[in-house]
Structure formats: structure tokens, C-alpha cells
Image (cartoon, rainbow, N blue to C red; front, side, top):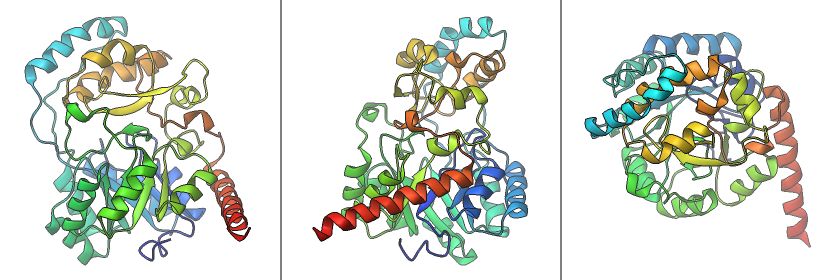
Length: 357
């Protein structure tokens, strides 16, 4: 494990900051207490809501943890395309007896206010998704003693993170559940994402930064594989989604291993940005027509998703999941950490034995 992380976690395992409620203070603290690095998701929260959760984590553990921020999004969505999609979803709103959301919400996710809090009362690590912070922001965190990590999906994005002075990159393969952390939302590249092992190698050859590997990782043997491929740490999201400490909807947790949900796909249906989830009715019916309009579509469908969950209907929920979702294990977070570490040690021993033959 890179020296950049040895003081943050005992084991090379990061709990992904899953926006939308899954990454509770209880989950973050449990992972950090067990020797991993727990991460809070600040996305979709107010600045004060983020701060309150930071205080909760500090009350549960003295171990290091991270906070993830969404970068502000540029205005490039076609308002007419959003309105066409609104009309298409009118029947869904009627069926679930709810209203479609307004699409004129803020695109910056309270970024500046969150920066101010994190610089005034620093946490050990801050990561960024959907773009790269400026060099000035990175330098401010460096002065505050906070490590910075930028989520990247291409070698070019990794180079941008290195130019900004980031301490590390989180390399996100196409296998990852939830939103792809691309710096620029280009519909023409929706199916052009790189697999994790190939991406790790390309990024390692493009930049001189520690690498956190993310995408479909569910077992200790997979963690060993990405470490052998050049990663310094492995980030797992779906694996922790089903833990008791996770704040994910019970229907979402159950769907991970429900035989009704066979596979995952990338879709814009729920948010207007490519995100990997379990294929359900809503994704099949509306995914092909969803515009490239984030976060407008996210706001538009928020009420529908909540109403579907309240009705006990997973067919219209955003069931974010990585490609390894069928390997999910319903264990408490600390116990899952123990199992992952044991599997990692076993895999390392097997690698060593083969090398000695």
C-alpha cells in the first residue's frame, strides 16, 4: 500500500461513498474501525447535512475517514429534451400518484459551501466525482492537511488530476455500480468505458499517482488482483450496500441477489447521467429515451423513485449495483471486513506459492 495511505487505513480497502443514503455515519465508522477507510457521500446533501454527518462519524470513531464531493455541473442540457422526457413520464406519475419534480434545481450541489466547511474543519481525506477541482482548491486542502483524491475513468482524466496536484486518483472501471464519474458527460462515449484492469494499467503508465481501484470488486481475491495490477487500494461499494449499517432501501438490498434481476446496465433513465444499476421495468422502458441532462433528470424522477419505494415496487427504483452484485453477502460491515481481509491474505499466499514454484 502506498505511503500516502498507510496512516489512513490498516488494510487496502475503501468503502465507496455511495450518494443517495447508503453511506451512513454508522457504515463509515464501522469500516474505519475495522481497519478500512470509510467514506461519507456529501452528494445530494446540504452543506449543513454533510457537516452533521461528519460530526456523527467523529462521535462513533477516532479513525480516519473520507468525504466525497460532487463537482458543479455545466449547463449544457437541452431544456426541450427534458420537457419531452417529462411528458413521457407523465403516466408513471399518475400510476404512482405523485408529482414529477422541478428541473431548475442547483447544478453545483452546494459545492462552495461544502468546501468552506471542509477547509474550516478538515477531515483526513476528500474525494471528488464528476470532474476535477482547481489547483487552488487542491492546494487549500493540502495546507489544511487533507489528502485529495479525484475519480477518473480515463488516462486523460488522471492526467488532469495530476496537473491539479491531487494526491491520488480513484480509477473507476465500467463495472462499477452507480454513476460513472466522468469529467465530461458525453453521450457519444456512453458505451466506451474501460474495464478496471485495463484502466489501472493505462493510468499507471500515464501518471505518477497512487491508484484506488473501483469497479465490481466483491471478494478478497479480486482485491488482490487489482493490487497486483498496480492499484494501491481497492474501493468497494455494492459489497457494503447490503450491510445492516447501510442506509439503502430494504428493497434495494434485497434486489442485489433477487433472481428477478439478472444483470446490470448503464442507463440515463433516472438521473440523466450514465449510471449502472439492475435492469428493471423503468430502465427498459425509459432508458433509451432519457436525455443527457444531469442533474435535471435526477430532480425530475426523485418523487417517482420515492413513491415506488413507498409502494414496495422495485421496478421503478434506481437499483444501483456493480457487475458483481450477485456476490453480495449480508454481513455486518465489521464482519465483512474480516472476511475480505482473510480472503485477501489467502489470495496473496496463493500468489506467493505460485511464484515460488
